[in-house]
Image (cartoon, rainbow, N blue to C red):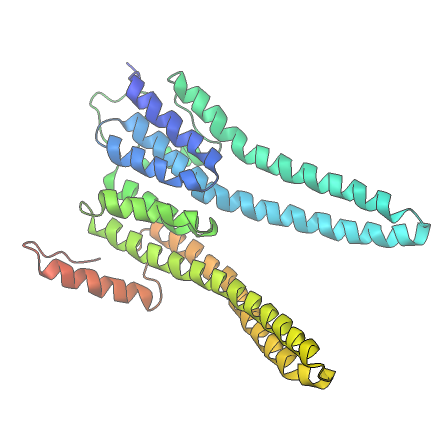
Length: 315
């Protein structure tokens, strides 16, 4: 017979799926649910891992689709704007119409992202075995999850694939600015002692995302500093009634600072791509190392393991 989920199983599954509503901040809840319920309930473990995948890998797909459609709408708007200028249509009415379209688009995309987790939560509340489109069946096959209950003996999910999935989703969560670090941090704290592989992947992911986030905010700080420097220079020149030629050094510094900030901001998307590639490599069965950073973390873990009674070796 097909096993019936207990009330505890349902509660954890509902919490894991509904955590998507927190839009990034709730990504730690599926990891907590999986950590607490693994080797207790295949149903709960699968639903939590599925929810984690939707909030990391699914978010990546949704975000890229959002950017693609938004870019297409902007191109269409500029083309239409050129025709508006030729036909002498009122500019205010045109912009009001397009602003309405953009707002509807943003709300619609947000609703599209949140709709599936809500449906999943409701379904799990009734004890049903929910599968996200495409993702669910593939993940069930990857984890060895049998939702039919046809097997004579209960077999747990494939442990290696569970840990690889959690590690990979930590890499994919790099697109969730700041809050994405909660996934590898939670995996490290709750399951790092049981798996050196998951500990290593989680730590290097956490450090990598931390550096990427620091780079992003650092670029913003440098840009604001440059604007403040120019404003302060202009104020000083007004107070001393100096000539405009004395403003040139301030503007030169601002231009230099702006170039540095832009270069840093352009580097962030590249680092995001590397994070996505790392997640892909982990799912393919590799013990991926970030350039330079990965080796430093590995050496640190190996040194710490040598001091323990049972030294471990990274693959």
